[in-house]
Amino acid sequence: MINWLRDISAYAVIIPVCAGVFIAADDQTSIVVVLPELLQDFRIGPGELDRASWTVTGYLIGYTAAMPIMGHVADRFGRRTVFVGALVIFMLGSALVATSPDLQKLIGRDESDLNWMIGARVFQAIGGGAMIPVAIASVGDVLPRARHAMAFGIIGASAEAGGVIGPLWAGLITNFSSWEWVFWINIPLGLAVIAALKFSPAGVRNPARIDLVGGALFVAVLALITAALSRAGDTDVVFGILIAAASAAAVTTVWWHRKVDDPILPVRLLRTIKFTASNAAHLAAGISLITVMVTVPLMANTVLGLSPLDGGLMLLRMTVAIPFGAIAGGLLVQRVGARWSAIAGFVLAAVGLAAMSKWDIDIGDPSMTVHLAISGFGFGLLIAPIHTSALLYAKAGERGTASALITASRMIGMTIGLAAIAAWGTLRFENLAEDAPITFEGVEEITSAGLTVFQGFFVSASAVAVLGVIPAWLMGRDRVESASGAST
Image (cartoon, rainbow, N blue to C red; front, side, top):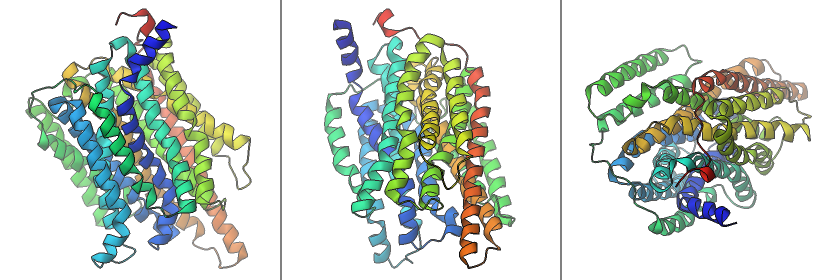
């Protein structure tokens, strides 16, 4: 009993950062439920999904771009200081998103112009993107190595729990009020977390300079690649220019990181197979996960004819299983190592997604719940082994940057996956439905076209999960000793 209480108190020190991570993660998934209502408010049709998708993609870009930069800043100035600053940015961004329709009218913009909304989402994401890597890095400041895998699982579970609540919370709010309140709620919650962080340790500081040029180059590469992917179905010259610019930015980034002494990305760690494999595995997980998280509510709100709340509840059947998988993954790493834990996660996710690709308009329970739960549990299993393998060889002053990069890999995957969905999905739908007549039979034909596109998304997500087994194998068999058997 005493040992059990000692374990609980040891992990209690990360509760405030877990709460912040939870709030930031909530807005990653809540937007996919709000998206159908946004399409109506901004008068954007089904054939313009690529435009609306930037409300999600913009958040992912800002979220991902902030990670290595803010991870580096956290190593320099301390985890707690940077975490509080990130929360403040996130709350201000939430207010800007909530007021974007009114501000847009105030400055005389067209009501279908999403640029202000997208800009506000990017700003909000800069704060949200800093929280997870700083939280993960703080584990090394407050807990011994033997407890790291479980702590990573707890933080991962907090992030995924935010993802669980996000669709349900957004569905409830939009069912009784307007979508703006999905973002207003972040402000009082953020203030409560800041108050709790007063009792958290400040963290280790690294006096090294911050590589702002490297950070800017990283942002440029990410933004250009995403913009290029969003136009992948086009044949105009813009696509070629974006590809050329992204390639040039990538080459410049490599050159710069070889030149400077303390680059924004951890070059020493990137030269290790296990760290690189962990990043590749997280990239695959991100592509597969975002495909499902966008497809399920869109499918529910379109071809299945369900409400936003019902779409959120449908996605909840997957996201609710992710935190349980994250905790199980933390325990599994201690017993069988990172490699087999991650492989098990990818296999379960692939099996569940393959089953979902067979869904039709008559899909119901128990099949739907079982398929979603299997996929969610599989995605959850991946969290602890990937972070454990990635951070095993990071020095104390590198933890913020290393954890930022491993988290950014998943977000890059999500950004790539979403851009691909928007480009390929829109093109595929238009090709399937272009000859549909304006009759009852035409409506059925359009519904069938949408269903075919969604099934293709699930097949693609399953295939990416299968490919994820390759980097998972390369992560190695490193196993962390149980905390109960290790000295603290």
